[in-house]
Amino acid sequence: MQVGCDYLPEAITGRPNPTAPQLEPAGPTGQTVLVEQTNQSPPPATPLSWPSSATSASVTTATVDAATPAEGVIQTSGASLDSQGPGTLEAAVLESPALGVGEAPTAGLEVPAANRSQPPAQPGQIIINNAYLRFVYDSPIAAPADGVIVELQAEEGLIVRKDALLARIDDRLAQSELEVTTKEYEAAVEKASDRSEIEFAKAGYDVAKEELRMAKEVDARGAGSESELLKKGLEFKRAELAIPVAEIKNRQDHSAAEVAKAKQGAARVQIDLRRLTAPFDGMIAEKQKEQYEWVRAGDTLLRLISMEQLRVVGQVRTSQLSQAPHELVGMVGTIDIELYPGRVERVNGKVGYVSPTLESSGGYKIWLQISNIQANGQWVFREGMPARIELQTR
Image 1: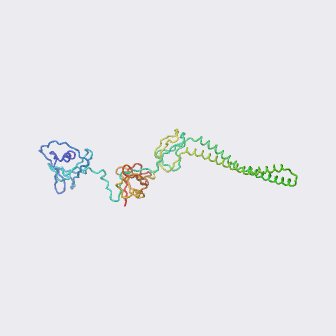
Image 2: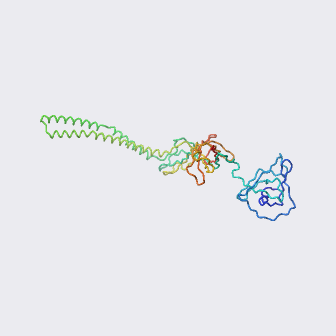
Image 3: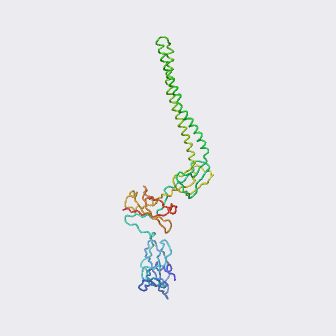
């Protein structure tokens, strides 16, 4: 015979089912024996209504102490009931040791808690059940310029080191610009290093100075003319001013050399931009473009993830706090990470962040940073894995 949902109306309505078996204890072992009731007239039909979520209940499991259950004995492992509507009720009996015909149950059906397997939080303890893992460094590698991908050394799952070449976009034009600017820079440097004009100006100054001295001596003896003396004075002044002019021109040549050097550097940057390298050690998680494809600036080529560091993200409700939110920063917590149903890894982490704003859900976002672990050369923890955080606040 079937035991379970066939006798659920008796438990809900409180009316005995005339065809239901009677449960009576049998023997000192605590076994529960099923006693059939016969020759009973059925009661009038009564509409059934499913109990609301507020209905209190008590469902217990029948206990069998004997090593081998006797025939007709109920042996179960538990019961469950969905509070929103009819569900599956495994073989179970009510708490009453012997609920006979005509006896109504003394209590309703209790809906089990959602997380009955998890122990409740103790005083001074914060438990976050709905946490998840997220990588610290998860970066899309995008094309910085238009062009054709002429080289692509990336496959999904490939482990790369920092600065390793991932892809190269056609850089022939940038290479030509580099050659031109390099020549310009070399010419500018050579011109800036030429100080002949400065030296010539200094020599002209010395000559003009000596001629002016001689003209003054002649004029002092009354043999010279005043116009000749004025001419020599003007030539001396011109030679004197030619020195700073030559020096200024030389400084301009040096500045031109620096400009040429900057242009050369800009050409090198254009080449480097077309060489996409890994910004950190990581794994290529996704490849979105193929070699010889045309890409535009901003198009994502691939996605690189650093597998070494993760953050466990969760939310602390205000009702769980016994101290100010900022005091959680730096607190060490225990984290249970579910690799798959039935397998949990426990690690320790430190609270590195508490949100400065209160979320609309009534809590503060927090995360704890942890280090990944390896098994057989493979990283164990992955983004999105569910986790449970336990913080001891005192």
